[in-house]
Amino acid sequence: MSDIRQDWSREEIEYLFALPFNDLLFQAQTVHRQNFDPNQVQVSTLLSIKTGACPEDCGYCPQSARYDTGLERERLLPVDEVMKAARLAKEAGSSRFCMGAAWRSPKDRDLDQVVEMVKGVKSLGMESCLTLGMLSEEQTSKLKEAGLDYYNHNLDTSPEFYGSVISTRTYQDRLDTLQNVRDAGINVCSGGILGMGEERKDRVGLLQQLANMEKQPESVPINMLVQVEGTPLHGREEIDHFEFIRAIAVARIMMPASYVRLSAGREEMNDQMQALCFLAGANSIFYGEKLLTTANPGAEHDKALFKRLGINIMSVSEDSRDEVVGDAVQEFSYKACSGGHHH
Ligand code: SAM
Ligand code: DTB
Ligand code: SF4
Image 1 (tube, rainbow, N blue to C red):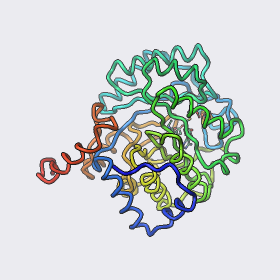
Image 2 (cartoon, rainbow, N blue to C red):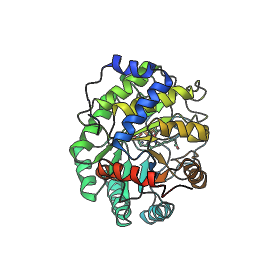
Image 3 (cartoon, rainbow, N blue to C red):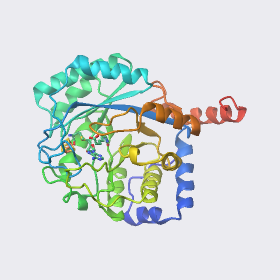
Image 4 (cartoon, helix red, strand yellow):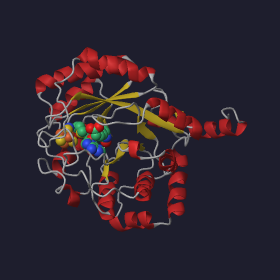
């Protein structure tokens, strides 16, 4: 296993970003192999449990009430409807079910209903994940008690660029929620969005914030902005795909034991681009034809891609950080050499 460092300077991160592409990918893949089975990818399925009419003003988001994006708003879904979707996700091979709500933060009565959803998902033998906005200490302990495995709350970008994307909550608000999640003993899922018009120094700043946290997030989603008409960020210049792959590689090197998730934006990526992201150390994706409100590649397409690349989907029991390091890696190399899984 690689050493985990939490004292990354901006200069060091800039240096990684500026490496020749092949050197950077080689280094990232080397770190990746020291910590994970390189041919295994964790898959999570998303469901929007409460859609639209959000009071926040996140400039990228189709769910903000401030932007006319043509999105139909929906109330908090009933528990049985959520369970139906979770069962389908499990049948499709997903090991984690992630439920998202367009809230600034959950109200207590709503949280009780969400607690039932978490218990339901757990009863299927799946891992549970939520993203509901800001959480207090009291709320995180309630969710921990319910058995919640992961909480997603993104820093989105660098502290410097943040203010030009969101004004209704501060960077510090986000760090506070992440601290509450960490203190409650829930796994942290936190990452950001690239392609919002930020510069490389902002991508550097985001990764520095994530890697230098008191404990690195277990899961780091790297989203490529999904441009939605009506949002302020619609029409921003797209990020160069090689720069995106570089960011994945740098995240992998800086956070060697974290799952780096190739998140939103895969609809705009061809198979070769995604293959390079996996080579750069991404080892998790969202699986299923919808993210929260926008399109994602269908499960059939992803299955076909994985087959072409020789990638295996991680099962629920394998989806645990302890089992994919050390011995598991050794055992896998042996299997690979014996040709057992080759077509
Ligand atoms: N409302 C909660 C919150 O923002 O804390 C939870 C749901 S919110 C939709 C979850 C995350 O999705 C955001 O933090 C953002 O990083 C990501 N996201 C939202 N819209 C996006 C878009 N158009 N493209 C890429 N990522 C997006
Ligand atoms: C994350 O980082 N990406 C996911 C999940 N966390 C909640 C959300 C992506 C949303 C993309 C826009 C949409 O579908 O509404
Ligand atoms: Fe609301 Fe979350 Fe969208 Fe921001 S990202 S507008 S908080 S749903």
